[in-house]
Image 1 (cartoon, rainbow, N blue to C red):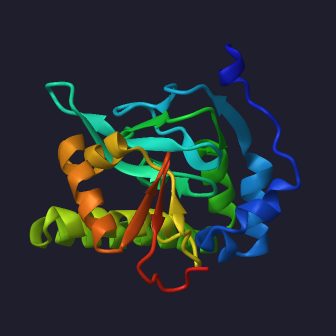
Image 2 (cartoon, rainbow, N blue to C red; image 1 turned 135 degrees about the horizontal axis):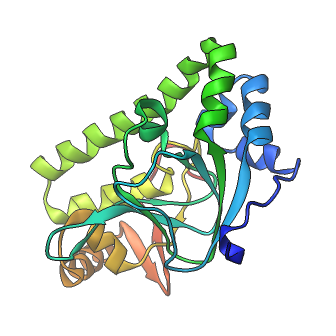
Image 3 (cartoon, rainbow, N blue to C red; image 1 turned 180 degrees about the horizontal axis):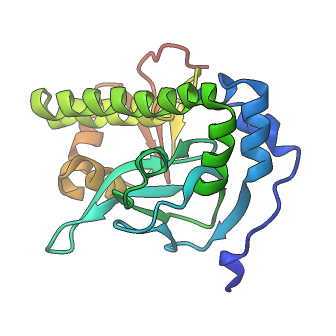
Length: 232
């Protein structure tokens, strides 16, 4: 077992940090405590996978430090990024529910840490407390709503607007935050993979958005200037 594979204990103080996520905060206290108690922390080096597409459904996960790319590669090896996950966003609920293989790769963008709640232990707990399946369903439904929005934008909007809306979605943590972040840390290459276009196209769109006053480009960050509901 390598150091990054080690299963680290979960500090009690992490519970308060996890409550910054809307989904987790909306779960009953007993379920929150159970997720923390059953989970373990796993550290990942930059570029290290947490799991791979087609892999075993081994648990419900939450980023607690760093960031993960969730996506896949096509037959030509081109990357497609569906989401860029930051603390304290939960994921992995699809395979947790149906027990089928993982639908995508989850890879650390930088040195990261993930809370992993093993599937078998969580299923056993839910058998004893079946009312909490509704909370798992809420998490899945939140992701489904975001997916519908992204599909609609892909079909109807020009690239410039798609870039801006994806940045806003990132700022809201894909629906996990009440208050949007003003600054988004995401590489243009990653943003291009999210939108299925070239980095050059994303760069042009960002410069056009900056020229119209929608955002400001900084080194390694993008500052959103358009009014965002709930932004601080």
